[in-house]
Image 1 (cartoon, helix red, strand yellow):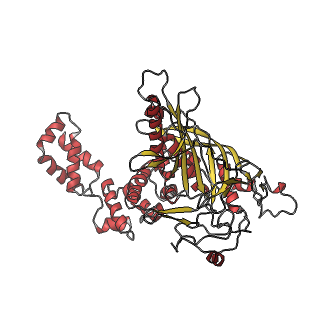
Image 2 (tube, one colour):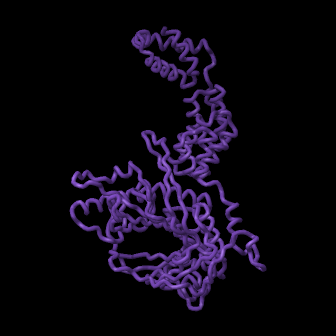
Image 3 (cartoon, helix red, strand yellow):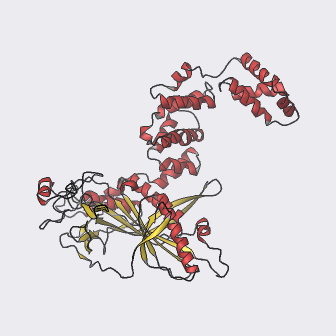
Length: 548
């Protein structure tokens, strides 16, 4: 208990000087509108009595923790899994007389995110107090932007892969109502054994961006795709690390069902979903649950629910019949937040280094995920699904392009090695791309050996395995040490092929009767004899001669 409760004297001792100019931002994404036939087919009940079937309507609220070293309104550090109550300033603990100081980094992150999502940036935005009582909210209110947020009216474009081979890219748009800055609350740790609740205020005051989107989605698959795209954008911008397991990206889903053309139904809110996969499952379950209730003649309750990943169901938390009065009021301790279009619009006496300038932030925007995927497909001729795989893994695009720079092998051949062999090994050992024991130049050397005919494709995979286990050795060294080079002695290959032909008369008879596919079996036997070191083109030619 002592570890979780910080006395006022300890807070005084550990308090860091409040600094920073612009605070945290929290992203909330609400509903999303699209008409994906596959999604609709998943949720449509087999009811012949109704002219139109019920369909889902999904909205999301996403809170994204801003990637900043300090909190939104104080100089306290931001660090995951720090000792409880070790990162708490006077202001975070809401001691009397403390005042907020806006963290400029958080404002710049919100503006950058708004620009990347095609939002209009408000040159003047306001802060408000949202009053509610909870044990981990020391002040009894949250500082947010309810009336006039920093960014409004944006669009998020996301993609779905459809078709039998998931090679057809379907693009959809989601309207973003607003992006607002707000502070996070602390964390309540419930101890059921001792019937007590402990409070950790390390998270209190951390900057969030809340992204609010209009109800434009119809199923879990669309919601998951939109959230994943947003996650990639935030990571590319560097405004949010997007680690959902650490609570850096938290999703609330508003779900309802209705018949097309009719008013929206009563919605439920599924809170605090911390996985893209769970988000899709929770939404699809909730849509089916509501459809079942209405088909039985029941009424959907306006309530807050939670997703139980073990049972795959949503469970009720509390009802929303009584609308809570948050008593919003202007934040008296913060003046209006002003951002400037460019340096020319700065008032006299304002230091450009201390101001938030939209044009400067716009010029620093990186290549966004959708643009990067299009570039990869157009530049290298790879399949759209491969571009998604590359972009979805942090650092994989850079790895792929570094390999291409060092080898003459075609991009469509290199992509298989990167997405299958390399990525498969990384996933198996839970490693990131930066932790790969095989560097891009090392993989390029291996592919060059194969491309120039020094080793076969099957041997190349053997060499890759050995390189993975022995990072210090090159492909050429491993090939030489284990005598894995292609058998170049034509007489030796003729002898091995003759031996295989003589020992398999039935297969030879089938080939001579027109069943050419059997030749592949004989080729496999030759490769087994040579331990994969025979040139498959030469082996096929020799076998065709001997079985003709």
